[in-house]
Length: 474
Ligand code: BYC
Image (cartoon, rainbow, N blue to C red; front, side, top):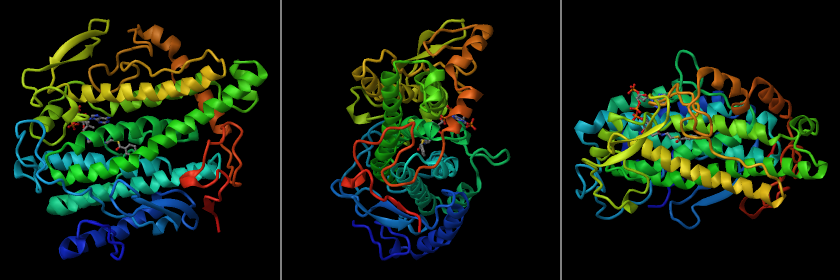
């Protein structure tokens, strides 16, 4: 069904035919806009931004581009079309038709998954709200805003499900999604990484590289869901998520290219000299990488989780690319290797595969991150620079799961407390690193100009030139 933009809330779910639901969502809409006014990108409300808006859910040409003030962005409800005769692909209900409604016995678990997913979306907008004030270029500013409006739309996607399928509880959860605040001591966001600060653009690019990649894997697992409306809405969200990871991947690559060019020109790899020249030395980039990679690894939950087993067995949440995995898709009696650090060494142990599903998704995420990071190394290799970036070992700096608190080096060696403390400054961003990176955060907004610490992109957005006026300040 095509998207109806004549409605107050654009949608392709025939919202007009359900007046009660429509009224409830139209009641939530001004609250969302109020939240956006308070917590959305600071000072941006009058800007005209060159943004894409979803106009259909077809593979080809789903987006149109044009100038829009962000508070006027047409946030709406877009589900991928229903697949005829779709069947449940895993768990105890494997082979049965998917559900168009929520089975009573799975209501609270489904609600919990949808709320957790929904909570991350406004959280990331809150985390990024000051970044526009220190953008390295107008091109990057526009990309930040695109990410922000789409995270807002992802919130709409989850709120629709809550309102449509969870009655009064759902409406209350939708209100609460606008009440929690990232980093708030009393009412924080649900998951750890979404309460961290994103104080500078190096953090922002790392966040979109790693944490949006968690989004890719979690959403992919939800596209497998037996609850068809969740599967269809997350499938469409994934198409938007691709751009967010592009922003991170290219943002970091451009930072690395800029530093590498200065290293070659000046024949130095000394961090102090490079900092004096106003670029970000590669070890600092690696420390930020270590931080964001490890905090994001925690987002997959505990390595052994009875919740994960229940979600799978009951058909609520599958594995990444479930239908490409050659096994019985039930997993009773199957095993999966996890790591145990209790003996003082990291020991691989076979655990029940059902309980280890979080670990499996984390492993899928890590291998995807590794290939992304390898692409950055190509930029160094091409310039004859020996330095190589790497994704730290999954036991490094963990706070969730059985490795929480184990002192594991980025290379995967278990350390004593004192050995860990002696090296931690080499592995995680120090206060000095953060202050240095912060000192670079000026605001560059002249079309086609870029801050000294980042290379321009190889092309503009939607075929526009790099020096396009992507944001008009009015
Ligand atoms: N921080 O049994 P466990 C995205 C809690 S990102 C704090 O392992 P489970 C995006 C856990 O809640 C994708 N608490 O839990 C990206 C549980 O609490 P209770 C977001 C944590 O349920 C960028 C307890 O610890 N989507 O879209 O198996 C920008 C025991 O843990 C954390 C989803 O995550 C943590 N990191 O797994 C914008 C999908 N981890 O019950 C957006 C939906 C665990 O003891 N969520 N806990 O009170 C899920 O599938 C699951 O909730 C999780 C947790 C995988 C997150």
